[in-house]
Amino acid sequence: MHIIEGILSSLRIILGRKKSFSILKDVSGIIKPSRMTLLLGPPSSGKTTLLLALTGMLDPSLKASGSVTYNGHGMEEFVHQRTASYISQHDLHIGEMTVSGIIFLLFYNFVYGC
Image (tube, rainbow, N blue to C red; front, side, top):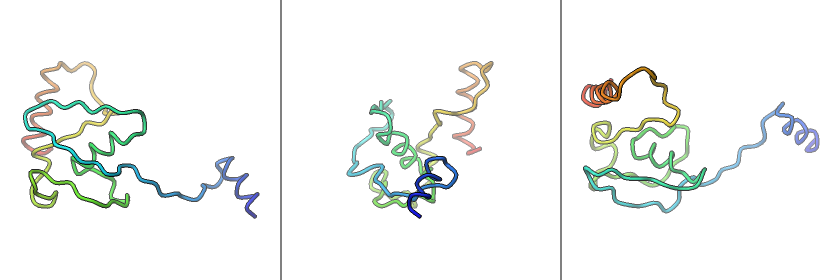
């Protein structure tokens, strides 16, 4: 039976069993306000996951432990959308828009939460 499952899994006819693994482990740091911060790391090191955690946008189906705090306050104690935002690396945009138009839309989204 295991041989048949292995063959079907390798052919992507059935999905293999899910394995659990840590994406981020023992991460801590300070990001000072009003400063641009560069986040570097090798591929699949958890950069996007860290940014999603900081903006409260982690997939709810992920099993997570630990906490994210802002100035000692937990994510549930304030509206984190007013202090942090995340634009996906695969964000859809209109190529004909000017930089000032994009900044206006980002500001509008930040102020009105649209």
